[in-house]
Length: 154
Image (cartoon, rainbow, N blue to C red; front, side):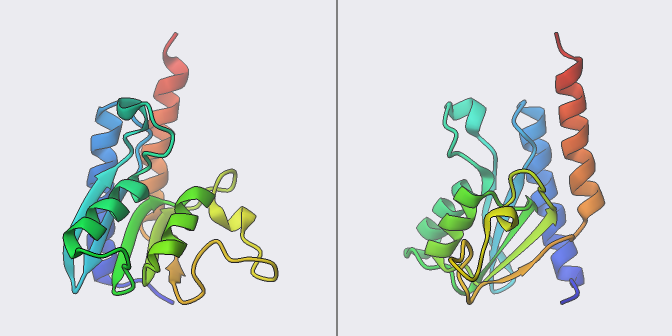
């Protein structure tokens, strides 16, 4: 599946959220949830600020989108996230039944695809369409810059 100009537009909004995280010394991951071509949730990592390992961008976005829609199922929505979801966020995506996930950079170490084994179990709902690599270079560069900065600090 090829990504569209809309995918690039919404991923740029997710990148803006990731930049906010970067500026707050959070791992720079941003997420946007879109329904009917309208942004209904924006989020970025808040793990450091909230002292909560579960405060990933996707988790924050799922909560905000569910609140906005007044329901827990997001099957008519698309999640745009700058980094491939981890297994925890993939599991949450499963339960929300989000219709589509579009991510930027792959995560070979902690991404859900490393742990997903459709023969035994799905981390992503079987009806959820997934596409990766949208603005991958921009998403990767922000993460690399963040961790390079962290390595320079004493």
